[in-house]
Image 1 (tube, rainbow, N blue to C red):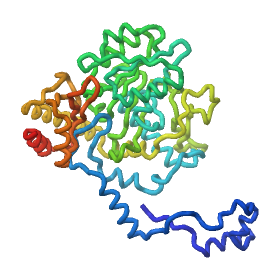
Image 2: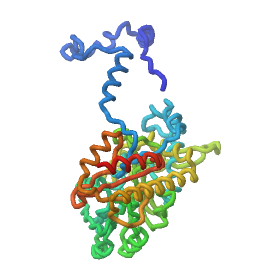
Image 3: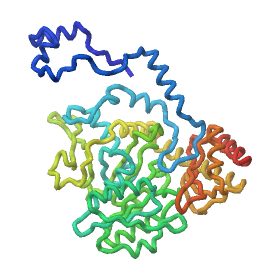
Image 4: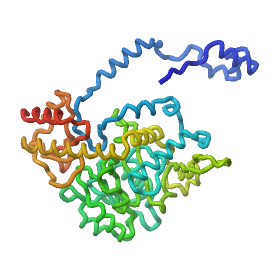
Length: 439
């Protein structure tokens, strides 16, 4: 990234001359005397670039960087092609802010349009917005889209990521929707229990695919039953898994949302991430945030415009279903660049390798006594027993530079959620197993 150089003293004098003023003091001469800071700000002395580099390096060394990760639960380590950072790191994109005079920013609008197109292709649905803050926010916003005067109840499967469930409850507390959590049954949504809850007041059902335990849910069957009760099906999906699983559209979903972090975004410290949202055409006007469309200008040339902005800053507040303020434009563009770089075949290869390596890890863990809790189809995550020593296991792995699976809590205490992606090599998995043998 290039350097930003402040204006020089000569440039300041030139600007003052242009407006007919001889000094900065004259420029601000109308400010009351009692409001002027005379002794300077109480800030420490500035540091040189070398000093700053040393200080930041010392701070960074307090973080532990793991050489191997076997943890997912909503955020995943995938290989990011170098071209992704090369493009998204350019100043024109990295420093661009929300395009309030949108049509002037044709390049930014096109990146959003391309992103929307790719998300529609990935989920099979008709329309996409320009993104929202993260996957959990997208889930809560999707439920708000389904609210109707006589349909004020949302069903949410207990097999959804707990953080997403908490976010949904927070949003619904504010908008007056009732949230009913469907219990799990052997790691899956309890369809029989769900069936009994499908009354006229149900606006929608939220289902995660694959679910929090890594299991592939019976989404088609659930979708059919929800639609029979005149409700909407919302699916929260892993975008990498969409390369090999049935799309939300094929599962009859009305809305698909999810966390876009696997599409070219590093784990960092939990963000910034990306919430994607797509839907059927009949729900497009309820999508929160922005939608960019393609048209032609007066000369017949291709042009991009902000087609729809169903948010309270642009329409009557009482008609807005969301008060979301912005979109994750840089993260959305990152996802578009990543998908362009890997292409359809590459994305499918990422998904296949993630699945095959997870199967290998599951097999090796079973060999040393870590029994699988749910013997069901899964994508790249699965749950095992922890043999009563989760804390000891994680401590030893941490000492060896490995972030192990996620120890589960509550009624799942004593279990570990493991994850693999394409970046986990066979040697890494074998090294993990060798360490666990000695615990």
